[in-house]
Length: 60
Image 1 (cartoon, rainbow, N blue to C red):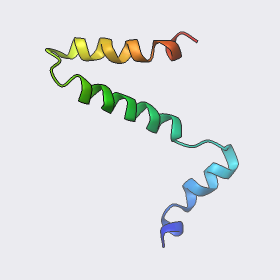
Image 2: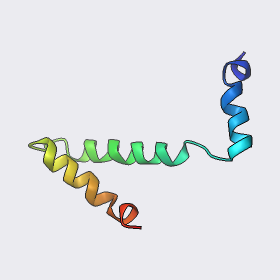
Image 3: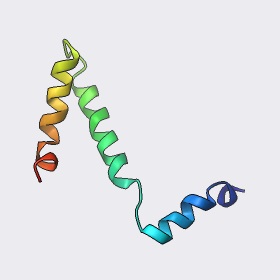
Image 4: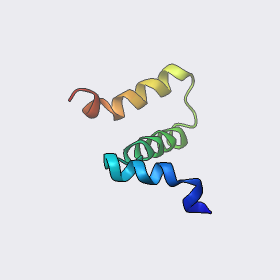
C-alpha cells in the first residue's frame, strides 16, 4: 500500500530524476542554526545568520 500511496512521486522521480534531498539539507541546516542560536534576540538576527550561511549558494 505504501507504493500505491506514493506511486505518482515514484514515477516523477524516474521521469525527471530529481529528489527533495537538497531541500531536506537546507531545512536541516536551518534547524541547526535555530538550535545553535537559541538566544537570538530577534528575528532579524536569525535571518541574517541564515543568509550568511547560504550566501555562497545565493551568489552563484
